[in-house]
Length: 308
Image 1 (cartoon, rainbow, N blue to C red):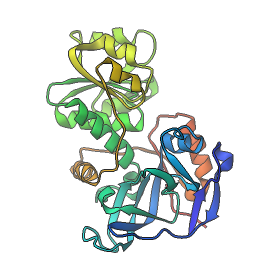
Image 2 (image 1 turned 60 degrees about the horizontal axis):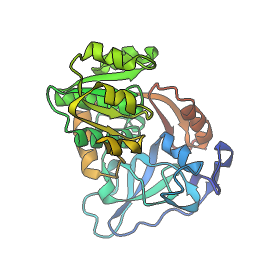
Image 3 (image 1 turned 60 degrees about the vertical axis):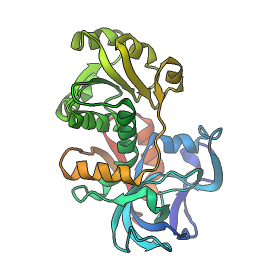
């Protein structure tokens, strides 16, 4: 099969189109023909070796953890799915090796869910990692009706999902972002707040009594978080493990088929929208990585099936 892969750590120069054996379909797994795969910052960070201390790697590596596609085959005793089903997944494994930037990917059935019928392939591919991360974070914070929630990096992929999930829960989201993204965050239901010096003062102007919870999707935000959090308030971060030393929760998203089912229901109900900023054919994965590295904040970057 065609795949994008790398045989050593590095930048985009190590990523190349290759031909690799199609993955085997073990019991309890499904083989997915890839229609689209999202690019996430973690993909190029893994390629650069940033996660080497905590994850084993088997070269050559096919990057990518998000996928939307069609079931090509099912393993033994996999009654949940059938050939032809339209599915999607956050397919991270314990070992970095066989990812979604390929013609096919095999994943455990427990990590797979039916694609939201209301979303196209590119939108569906952009939902799993960001949606599950936001869902896990808001679940950890027990966000509910009436909560005032501050979201650091509201314009990022996870932040946009968190805004919509908070609105659905009946909370009041405040979201930090640069001015160019404020209009879109208002459309999603947030009250945008400018980044930078004076952030805590700007948050207090909107929530004089402080906020009930903070979801940090940016990092380097702990000081501002503690400055605006109510006594007894909850906070969590996906980017700063030190929050655990300050009463917070450090969140690391997991593959979660039932969680994807929850997201699918919300998407099909019109509660969740996925913003796609750019789309590239699979063979242009290096250009897509460069786009992601620029930190444009305009929505998801997605790869579609190989064009040649």
